[in-house]
Length: 118
Image (cartoon, rainbow, N blue to C red; front, side, top):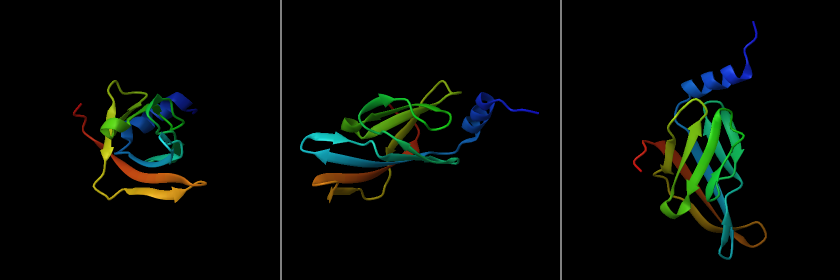
């Protein structure tokens, strides 16, 4: 018996528990980007671009990731769900403004899945 990939991804998305997003933000002057971030769920750790705005992802079953850095929040959507799941910073202390990548400043922040309130 063969299982179609779309059916497999839909099944994975149905059974996934809370996700975590580990962001690495690299700033040079007033320009910042978070392209080297990690999205983690029950099925692994996946590279994502968590820069400002919305984009598609390579995370199995996750069709869209959006970040709103001004309000320090984000949301994502699984392919089989009609509503988004939300992300906010966890209670851990962020690691901010340390030197990295050829004189740039970097920050790390962990976002946890939370009930949507916006």
